[in-house]
Amino acid sequence: MLVRAGAGLSTVEAKVGEAIMASASTRPVHRRTRAGPLSKVFALDPAGINWPRAVLFVDVALVPLVVFWAIGDEEYLLSALFGALFAALSDPGGGYGNRAARIAVFVLIGAALTALGFGLGGSGWGWVALAAFAVTLAASLTLTFGVHRFVASLLLDIWFIIAVGAAFALHQADITSHTWLQVLAWAGGAALWIAVTFIGWLIHGRRDRPQVVAELPGDTSRHGLTRPLIMFAVIRAVVIGGTVAIAFGLELSHGYWMPIAAIVAMKPSLAQGTLVAAQRLAGALLGAAAAAVVLLIPASEHGPELAAVSRGLEVVALIILMHGCAIRFWNYALYCAAIATGVLILVDLPQPSDYSAEGYRVLWTLCGAGIAVLVMFLAGLLARRSAPHPATPQQPAAPPP
Image (cartoon, rainbow, N blue to C red; front, side, top):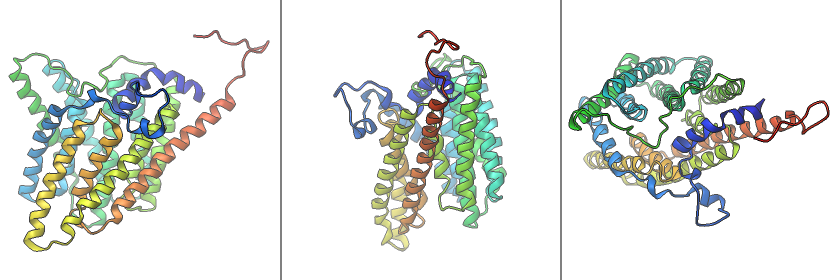
């Protein structure tokens, strides 16, 4: 059954893998016939650098950044930024009417998941794990509606886990966060992107526009709801639900990095999943080290000097995130390093001398990616043991494809 799951999803998964998780690793490497592990992890695709898109990201991100800094409600900034970013990633391009309608559907589903995630942030771990299982199962089954919709569902699945983690962290820190305001911030960030696309549509003479992130799949052709696809979806949901149960049941510090790493590494191809897990872990290590070095700067400052240095480092973090956006399809490990560096600087500025957070995040990233790869490895072993043997008189072999 698991062999058929891998075979049945191979074509679709290849498209998804090339576009989302293992961008540089799937291109041919011409430098050497046999590439070592590090060469594969840090393989570069020169065509994957996109600076205009990175500048657009900064332009859009500055709006909610300045707004929430001005009103002093930074706890809602995360929802607004992810709303704008994920709306852009899910943008299918084409005619503006169809484009806006599909983004609006994405935003409504995201708003519901935002409400669910922040609503469950202070609840028992059992409810959180059950919700994560259900959301991941539903997101995985959207593969039947095309790869593009699967990518959008994957983004929403990741956002749900981030929302639950953020809500849990705010609850632990005794910071008041209203669920409906988080939903409003998410919707506001996404509406900002819809407004940006409208302006761009007018500037370009009301013509159809291409997909913003051209590397992501635009395929919307439907696929049958087969037993292999259902099995893959169930395995994926069990792993994510299990890692969420571990992270929140044990109240691990920054434990939500575990299910995020697991959901990225969960792929039918064990080789591809292992490579993506290695790239994510390498990026987490590099990002944590870089953030720890940068956070040495404000650790010894006090008073007005600390405030000035903190604002300066926030700008540095934004520039680093811009670089991450530019190199997303250049190399996934370096992209993860840039994103981790920027995020850790922003998150840890209130406590710049507390370096345990970086260590926890790397540890849970390793655990999450390791669990995902181990599950797929065991599934592969089980599949080989249960696979039918070659031709016998009672069961002739199938002809080669």
